Length: 189
Image (cartoon, rainbow, N blue to C red; front, side):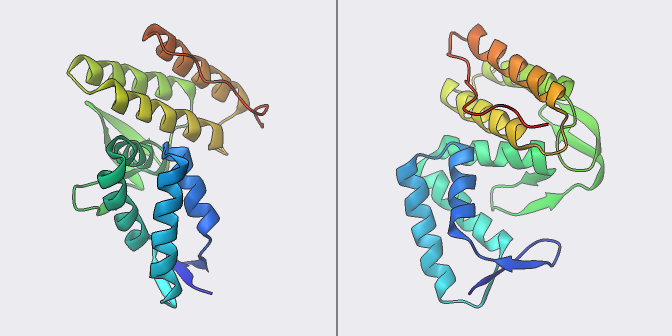
């Protein structure tokens, strides 16, 4: 079995389902997610080890070719929930603590990801500003989906904060004349 070398140096078994789910959460279509997973599976089966950075660069390159708005949403998710900023060549920097540029604001950043609904509201304010400056509705929609999925899967955000964050996201969608997201399952604490 091929091992994936994470940024921390840890190794874990390569699981194509994990990659497929990440692509779907970023908003990729089922067809594109399956295509990219199949391509990565082919690369991985020839190797004993592969880094998460190599997988990520390949995924972003293919998404940029196949569904550019999803590539943007993937990078948006990484910035907001993982504290990584992606540059055009696919490399990322990790911000453990300090200042992180979120859109047009510099924020104190204490670890990975958002902690509360107010931070989600600030991201939505920046998305509105981005839209006012010409970012396409398709990209905004992809980023909203990534934000929604990130909030749902954020393990250390309290349930009440998740509920408020989802309300902010859905209010934003409705202000644009878009349908709100519906939960398929009850929120977990």
